[in-house]
Length: 111
Image (cartoon, rainbow, N blue to C red; front, side, top):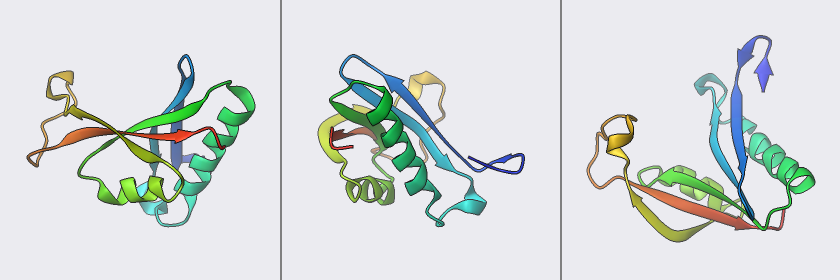
């Protein structure tokens, strides 16, 4: 999504065998709390529903982002119990907090 030449929101979708993986859903800080994230998620789900033959959508979030977990839960995503260690060896930085994990959320095909 753009505002003139400025990218204000983006989302990445990958198709796997029987599911779609959503990642990098983000909104520019100056445009947050305006419903753009909801719009982007809805557009991603609509694209998946119309173009990909999948059974569910999956995404990963950091355990410290409670507000994002709640955001996705309000939109039908549920934690599926899959917990992975933070990938410190992947070159993505060092966590500033202890006990940081990567959680997986899933939404069954109702989109």
